[in-house]
Length: 219
Image (tube, rainbow, N blue to C red; front, side, top):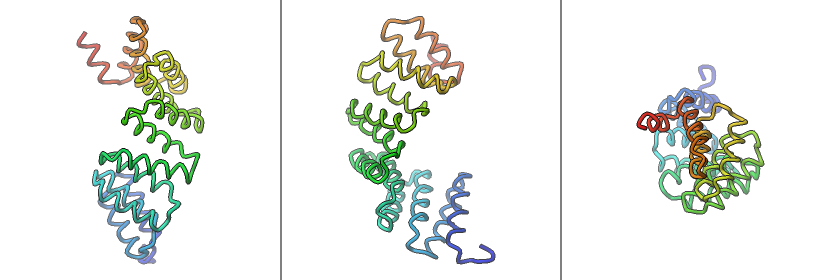
């Protein structure tokens, strides 16, 4: 930048580095500069939107994602992140529409399936959520979080055995996954396996699950 003050990419990259350090205001200042140099810089609008999102300025984030998408209508990640912002604004249906578009552009976008699954679950569409979590698992079979997410959806559907199987997979991939032990323990308890449920709850607490630790300490 010292050599070339009109180097838009340098401002964008420095902004991304500042965002990585959680200096979101500093990042926004750099993205502003990149956009001032190149008003058609889709990545800079997207990255500025992400910084605003982390500052919980969701409406402003949506506005920046809109601009990025206007410049590049095939920008799958911008649709995905706009979906996240809309979901945080309480517009779940609009969020799903954005996840749909991200998946249409990139059918291997595992995170878009995952977040669409959460949105569907929040709307009461448990089977739709399970289908989306299953797709995320198919794309990345080593994603312990995806198994745990599907475990939670199966649990909500009353499929406790299926939930336990998914939690087993999550724990096999990541033996330090406190949330998976917690969810497996809860499912075991609902199936009448109090001993197994208690053992999993203790394991979750030992791995740092605060809510489980507090519950055990109150017993």
